[in-house]
Length: 499
Ligand SMILES: Cc1cc2nc3c(=O)[nH]c(=O)nc-3n(C[C@H](O)[C@H](O)[C@H](O)COP(=O)(O)OP(=O)(O)OC[C@H]3O[C@@H](n4cnc5c(N)ncnc54)[C@H](O)[C@@H]3O)c2cc1C
Image (tube, rainbow, N blue to C red):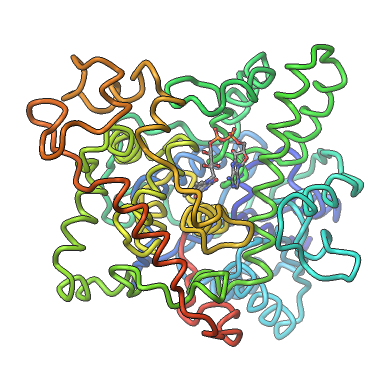
């Protein structure tokens, strides 16, 4: 009997997996494959933290498939080449896969479709990673939205697919497979003390914990960095260990049962964040050039420091002072407690609270005037939930260069932000041990110029007010007219590795 292939990508689960369901519905045994990259030309977005989580997800998926009587096949290389070999080896007559909303994934899909047509098998892509793909949520004129609120309204009005589970048979194939990947596969070393458990079961536990009460308080608590007020599910949505349809449906069911206004607001606010995720995919999908430059044309000539692409590491020698500033930001040694706490949280755990992501991103761009692309790249290297669409949108929002971004004159003051969102200093003390004995109110305003808050802790590296004023002037003077419409294409440097 012939078989079909399910190509696992960022849908690392068996439950409610659209393409896998369709593969099972053919009634043929399914060969499950995951294509690992060789990391031959390592991209500046790659990092061990996310790769370690991926390995954990793959180990869990392989075990689940084995429990269903099958085997997850691992191969290394470029997907279209690997799949072509696999089709021939197992005489498959179709390839099923879920579509990837990011532009590099789309390019690979086109290559797989072409290969499949060439060898005479069907390749079938499905919507799975999002509730609505980029061309489903459009303005009345059929154009993409550039602003979140009308996008969210249009998104909310569309009918939603419900989760579905189809049970089928995995092939008991004897074809060769590489062993389960570990960080050693790519000669990487773990950078995290306590890596998060990956896989469907761990993700389901996290979801259950969030839905069991925390979500109702989401609106009230989500901005407080020390509190476990958010879902902590971003990595699971990123790698597809959770189905977005299941998350959305469970939120709707809970909303139906929740009577008090605060609880309802919590759930509604959480869903709005899920819509931000899809808005980011839509922006990147329609304007992939945002990976190469500012969304807003008038800000494409802003004189940022270190205005070269992050992969050009040797360029830092042109601005050694900027390199020193950037390294201090990366290491959490800026002398701004909230910024340092955030960067140290990221370096230690591969995660950073959303409120703090905004603060550190604004600090790098508006206080140090360093090009946001370096921050974007650093985040991608270190975040377990690193998602190129949300990350780019978050950075361009903070730099005031993106679509629907923070206006350039509304610059967050790190001291005032601390007073609002970490007033008792709990978050700062957790991540910056040098400051553990300090009174929390000392984190809410700058120390006397030239002095530091505590022994062994650096003085603030800049004066926030001065830097803020300088930023506003930079934006006011931004030269108009640099049109780069031609670069609104998929970036030339294609990247097919694990992102
Ligand atoms: C500079 C910057 C960089 C960011 N980089 C990423 C990234 O690489 N990957 C990523 O998933 N998110 C990114 N975000 C968005 C946000 O910070 C994280 O999604 C969130 O902190 C994850 O924690 P959570 O799952 O507890 O979020 P929750 O508060 O529980 O939010 C629910 C879900 O909605 C999505 N979400 C929440 N906020 C946003 C947002 N602003 N934009 C897009 N999606 C959102 C996430 O999938 C998240 O899991 C970034 C934000 C900023 C300001």
